[in-house]
Length: 226
Length: 226
Image (cartoon, rainbow over all chains, first blue to last red; front, side, top):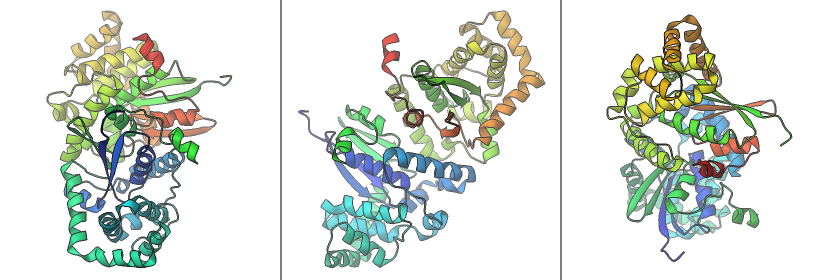
């Protein structure tokens, strides 16, 4: 390409199914497009509060649509999403604070494994309807991603330190400053300009902004590797 | 293809900029994909009321995003959108009742010209910041689309008849029954199944459902014709 890779930031929360789809698409393209993908674990509850937005599923007709939309997109994106049985309590009551603090700690100490740990947390909550709030749930995801039991416990101990808490706050505030009112958002830095794209359905437009080729949510290089 | 064309319905309101983009994309693909495109003029105000949804622009941060999103998509979709200066009053106060009743009358009497009249109304409100509520505004759009002054006046007289009013109500109710909480919605009838897709950003997924090829919002056959 001859040009330096453009930085693309993905702000996400594992509570959000659309975040998972955006995450997988960008992880697939990070070795195809000339980009430097930066994963930014954020807290969706903080963004909703700061923006005054409400979870779409609270409006019954949006909730019904969201369910079908997520299942259809999951098939097309080849991401194994399944709705948690008690969807609203998982989203509104249990939340993702510990999980996102854990991912923040992973990002601070073992950034090379952040992608895998994030995916394992999504596999729990959004594919197998398993808990992500208890310490043993988070440890199980971390070990499945390749951390040793000791490393995982060490990181878990750090989630209540000011350093980790503040980092998650700062990342969430950064998303708000970019104009987020939900997650995921993708922030592309191209030719001195910053573009914020909301949701998982602007990846084709992201390709256009980057001057890269959009080959669908499952690009051929990815297919070849399967 | 060897198979009968699949019916694809587009429910839209000229008040909605995303409807315009969905409309242009489907109009471009109607001669490329094996589909029978049915245009369904509907009233977005009725759908918002029935579903309990609120216009996204009422949340300040969504409003700011929407403005940039529409302009970026307009460029990528090659649809000449410009924001009306007094956007919120155009959307929330002036509305589109007469315009959508007029399009309903056009659909009843001259369906072959519905696409063109719809486009001319969008060109007024969403490209040139012109009125679409006054009789002379609607007549001007109709004549620009190819109707004679006499035909246009004849149709305008019919917008207060029960037949036209009821037809617009029925179409709007049909959208609600499909689960709409805003516009546009695209309803695809494929192999005995009905799929409702909300917004203008599911056209790639529509192609997937139809087993057709997605070639971006400006397909090559369209480029060739420009």
